[in-house]
Length: 132
Image 1: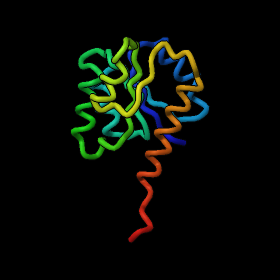
Image 2: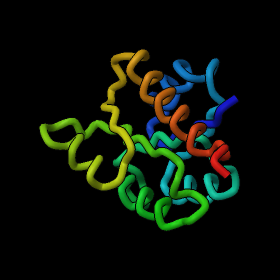
Image 3: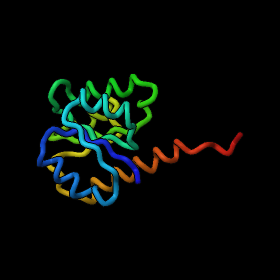
Image 4: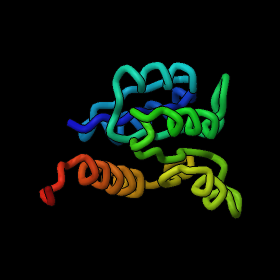
């Protein structure tokens, strides 16, 4: 079963994400950026759903630290955020997030589709090449 790390400090959002994804993925929740960085380093997931507004450090700072780590930089990171004003999607994609989903999550289908897309891409990148 593919592993998803969810970095989200709101218990209601955690419950909703768990209800949507628990039958499809092994989910690990982190309540803060520091907690996530430690846990993800020990147990790297196949994808990270990362809130922007977190205690201790924001999601962009967490993303920068993930990208600075050679062992973690290839993990797809999806911004999961209530920042949904015009231009926010482009802003976060230009910061290095692989995708962007707004909260509240109004469509299970969109969340699952985005995750499946990036998990599949990650699996393809991890496969050894037959070109050798």
